Amino acid sequence: MSLEAAIWNVAIFWGLTAPHEYAHAWAATRLGDDTPRREGRLTLNPLAHVDWVGTVLLPALTSLTGYGFLGWGRAVNTNPAALRGGWSGLALVALAGPLSNIILAVVLGLSYAILAGDHPRAADLAMRAMLLSLYLALFNLLPVPPLDGSKLLLALRMPAAVYAQLARYGVLLLVLGMSAGNLSGWLLSGAWRGARLILRLFV
Image (cartoon, rainbow, N blue to C red; front, side, top):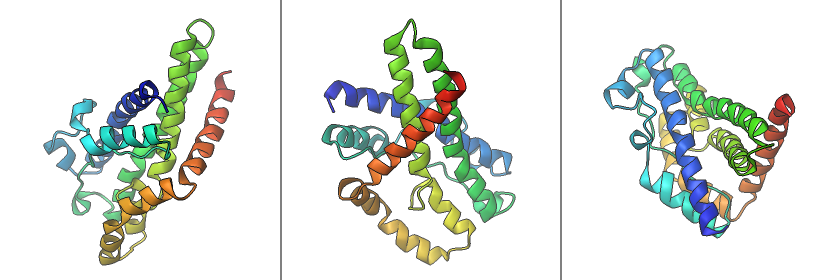
């Protein structure tokens, strides 16, 4: 990928990260945990949710090297003991992030349909953002710490000690999946399928 395309990838990803993390914070607050509010995470301000390694550096490197796309925002802290539903509440908080990506993808699909005729460059950016939003939704549903899908393991009562051991190697597993496996290809294929389904609603 060219440097310009990689920069656009990082910019779009950062833009998508803020509503994703806000969705976690909003869901936790609605379920009774005020930790995100106290830590300043109940906001759409992108600076509140940036992890400079996970949101900027790693997405840029993986974009430039062609090893898929890997990145994350700064995790929203939650207290399962304060959440209604406990671990089940934590699973709902975790799912709020990927759900926000799917909702954003639908909005971006509508934007693409509106812009495609008279503003092709803006439409191309909307399409790229829609694909990346769906890619992130699928990526975050993977049951690998620290991704959102891993919280479902806790909701299914995986012992905390086992989860902690898995978390020690989570990032390594993701990097290996991207670089040595076909994880990125599977995610991109799923994103394209989702994009086609969304565009059928508007085009």
